[in-house]
Structure formats: C-alpha cells, structure tokens
Image (tube, rainbow, N blue to C red; front, side):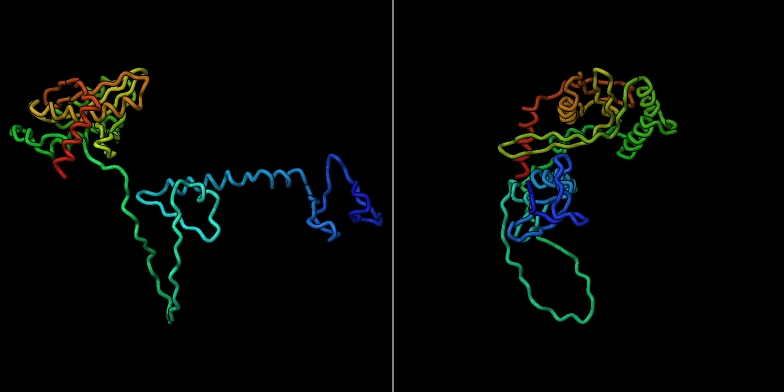
Length: 291
C-alpha cells in the first residue's frame, strides 16, 4: 500500500512508512497525478472533523444567545451566501439591493445606525386592573390615599426580604405579624404573565404579586390591601384570579390559594378564583370597549 507513492519523511529512504495505528503524518501533495491529497496528519481527527462539523454546536449556541438578547425586534442580515442556520429559520428571507452612491467626505462624521422595524404582530398586553370596574372605588371615600398604601407595601417588601425595618403604624405591625407567622420561602414583587386567546387574538394579562409564600406542598398568594372596608373585594377577585392561574401553572404539584390581607383589620380573606374562561370573557368585553 502506498508503495513508491510518497517521498520519505526524512533521511535517504525512497518510501514512506505506513502505520495502521498512527496513519500518515504528512499534509502535502507530492504528485499532481493523484489529484486532491488524501494524506493527513492526525488523520482520524481530521477526517471526523470534516465529516461531522462539531463547530456548528458552538455557532448555534452563540446564535441562540444573540437572539435572546432582543427586546422588541430581531433583524437578520446576510450576504450572498447566508449562514445555514438562517436558511433553516421559519422566516421569509427578503433580498434587497443596497443603494450605494459615492459621497465626498472632507472630515470624519458619525452617523447613528437606524432601521425601520415592522410592527410586531405579538400579543396585546393588559393589566388585570384594566378588567376591573374603577367605579367601585368611588364608594371608598374613607381611604387613606395612595401614598399610605405605597409605604405599607414597601415595608412589607423590605421586611419579607430580611431588611432591618421597623413598623411605624398598626398596618405595618399587622404585616410584620403575618410575615412572622409564615415558615416557608417568601417571594415578593413577583411578575406574573397569563396568556389568553381572546376572539382569535393573543392577549397577555400581566401584573405584580405582592407576596408568594411557598412551602413543600402549598403556594399562597397574598395581596396587601390598605382599604378600610371590603367594598372592592369583587374587583380584587379578578386581579388575584390572574395571579392564581399563573402560579397554578408554575407549581403544578402544589395546592395554590389566593387571599387578600386587609392591613387595617389584620384580616386575611381567601378568594375563590375565576376560571380562565371567565377571564377570557372579561378580556373580550374590555377589548370591545376600547375598540
């Protein structure tokens, strides 16, 4: 095999030595009559690399990282020979002829890169509060204002996170007592997103959960309310229902409950959540009004 086909690797011998375990170690074409060279150093790794391009794994990982950094729009651009991954994406590739013209520039200038991004066909976004009847709050003339409510919520968050804070009023003392009685994992200000299909359109309801208490087998949603009465409880039920269905999906093996904690009364009221179908109906009514 290979007798007389290759020059020696050194010395005066006229033949090359072939080893079944090591293969041939030279990467040169010595005889044009043989066409493309098939002599490799470390031939096993070379042949495998050409047959199985494992570099694609790293390229695919980098592409994924780059794509997931996009917030609103994702723009792909390629030359005459697009990358294999671009050709395999489920998107239409549009060919553009670049408008190039010569410009005489006397000095260096900086121009911001900008593109006309198409309108996103993504889902509509709404807050659970948009489904609630605001007129019900008109009956709450005995409220204490948004600033007071914000301070109590801020205290609840800080105390749950273990910060060194001291309650300044009865509402905050009630919050402290409630949190001290919870033995599981406390999560505050959790973002919740509930996608729904409303009249053929994807609608996402999103909000912030005041407190999530997680134990080995239960998940409790707690929403702090500084109201001095319970006149808005029916509307708060809509808000907590959204949170309930989100966490029921996240913690499928846990029992999920939702409750309101009235800080002035030091009272916790469990809420029976609306079904997803009822939320879809409310969202559909809301879309009809704004349209």
